[in-house]
Image (cartoon, rainbow, N blue to C red; front, side, top):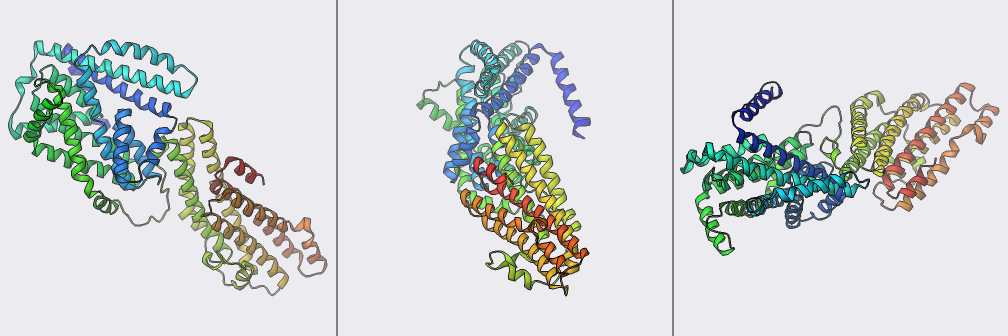
Length: 585
C-alpha cells in the first residue's frame, strides 16, 4: 500500500515543490546533500574504526551509567544516532548486550545526537561553511581510492562532513532567498494549539527525512533566516526528537523480539521526553534564557539557544526515565512473547545483525549451537537413549547396556520440526553475511559455521540409518550381535557426552585433548581393518546378513562421530591454530 500509493504521491509532491519555487529547490537539495553526507559518515566510521566502534559498545556497557555515557560519547563523535541504534539492535539480537545496557546506550545517544545542533548553530550560521566543505570533499575522494580500509573510511568521513557542510550552506541560502518572496514567519502560531501543530510538523518532517539531525539542521537554518519564530522552532525540535524513533522501529521490524523491545523503549523514552518538554515549554524556554546569559550566548542568537534547549530537554528526559530502567526492562520482556512455534526457527539471526561483522559471527555461532542442541535429541533417541541418562556418567557402556526399551522417535518428523527451517535460516544468513563482511577472516569464520551446520544435518541423516537396525536387533538373542550394536551406541553416546562437557569448558587445549581421544576411539569402528568382524563370521557367531548390517552401521557411526568432532572443533575452540589442528580428521 505504502509503495503503491503514498510513495508516488510523495515523489510528485517533491517534484511540485521543485518546480514551484527556486528557493524551495535549493532547500530540498540542501536536505538531500545533508542526508548523503550522513550516509557517507555512517559508512566511513564503519570502515575507519575497523570494528573498534562495535568493541567499545560491547565492552563499555556493562552498567547503566557506563552505557549512557558510552552512548553519549560515541554518538557525539560519530554524529549518527541511527548508526549507533542499528549496532545496538544487532548486538542485542545476537545476545552480546543486555536489554538494560542497550536502553542505556539509546538514552546516551539521544543526548549525543544534540551535538549536530551545536555544530550547525555554532559554525554553519556564523561562517562560510561551504569553504570548508570543498577541501574535505577533495581530500575525502582522494583517500577513498586508497587500498587500505582505514584510509577509505577516513575518506568517507571527510566526504560525509563535506556534504553535511555543503547541505547546511544550501539550506541557509535557500531560506535567505525564500524570505525575499515568502515570509513563513507570518504563519507563526502561539499558544498550545500552535505548539501541538508545530510538534506534529516536526514529527512528520523527521519521518519523511528519516534523520532528526537533518530536521534539526533545517529548523536552525530556517530560524537563523527568520523564516520561523523561536518558540515554534523549539516545538519543531520536540517533534523531531519524537519522529526520530521511526529509524529504530524500521530497524527493529526485521529484528528478533529483543530488537523490537529496544525500539519500544526508544519510543517510550522519546515520547515521555517530548511530552515533558511540551508541557514545560515556556518554563524551559525561560531556563534557556537564563543559562544562555551565563555561558556567553547572545540574547538574539536564537540558533544557539535552540541547540541549548535541545540538549537540556534530552538530559532532562534521561534524568526522568533512567531511574525506572529496570522496571521498563521488566515491562518490555513481557512484550512480543508467543508460544513456541511448531517449526523451530532462528533465534539470533536477522537482517540487522548481518550488517555488523562481530555481532553476525557471534549470532551465527549461537545459532549453530542451537541447531546442534536440537539435533542431539535425535541422536540420543535414535540410539534408544535419553540424554539425561548418560550425560556426565562415568560408565556409559553400562547405561547403554541397560537401555533396551526403544524410544519412538521419528527422525524425519524431528528434522522437519526442529532442523530443516533452522538450517535454512543459517544457510541464508551465512550467504548474506559472506557478502557483507569486510575482511577474509570473518568470511572464513562464517564459512566454517555453515560447514558445521551441514555436518550436524548429515550426521542426523546417518543416525537415522542406524536407528532401523538398533530397533531391529535391540532385543536380539544373539549376544555377539547385541554387543556390537551396544558398542556402536556407546561410541556415539560417549561422543555426545564429551561434547556436552566441553561446551562449558572454555580451555582450548583441553578441548583439543578430549577431541583427540575421540579420534583415537573411532578407529575401533573400522571393523574390516581391525579384523573383529572376520573373527565373528569365521567362528559362526553371526551370519552374513548380520555382518553386513554391522559393517554398514559401524561406517555410519564412524561418519557421525567424525562430523560431530568437526562441529565441536569449530564451535568450542576459539584459537585459530588449534582449530585448524582439530579439523584435520
